[in-house]
Image (cartoon, rainbow, N blue to C red; front, side, top):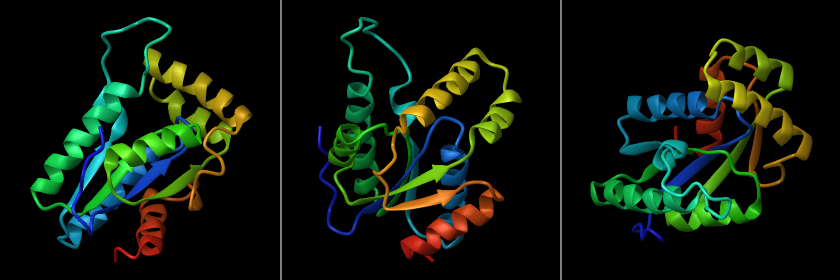
Length: 175
């Protein structure tokens, strides 16, 4: 399952609870890298495993996602991409280790923080069943402190997305 990226590939993994703005910030980071005309890939890792074949309680929800992540990273590396922006909810060290193995490159981890009332406001505008589930999950994740302590950098995502993305890109040294 491990992708073997040539030396020089590096990435940032944006983590946080549901509704923290991982995808939005990662999209903005990708835009900033593209504006600098540097080869990059943005992977919203959730989409690499959105589907299901095994609905048993024993199903490993991350396994197909990680297999797909390794394959997609390998394809981008073969195309000459060296910078990767990933967005994914990571609850614990085991999941982080498995993501790093699948990516096959150094990943710096940035955890976005947002207070629950702000998450409620953000998710309230999207009335899909999935968003209602995400809101409940965010409350549980915050209560359990899921993902805390896994990061190299904590960033409060309570400012305009462009400001948050610029802060992260600057910290990464990708400017």
